[in-house]
Length: 65
Image (cartoon, helix red, strand yellow):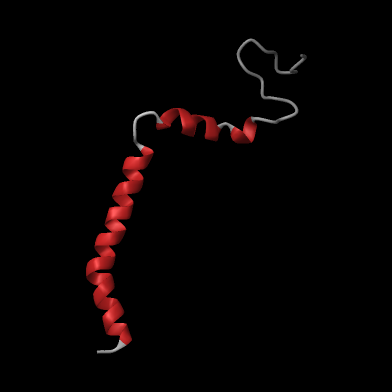
């Protein structure tokens, strides 16, 4: 049996099962309780150190702080 056939057989069986297990683990890890706060903080990183923040509620569009 050639190396190609061996690797193809592995990918068709155990490789598929391994990748499915990794996928399910990642989905469970992302959706675990309490992770929303962490991901919310990470999503705000690009806006954390701006020199002039965007106008928000209660601010005029000129940003006269």
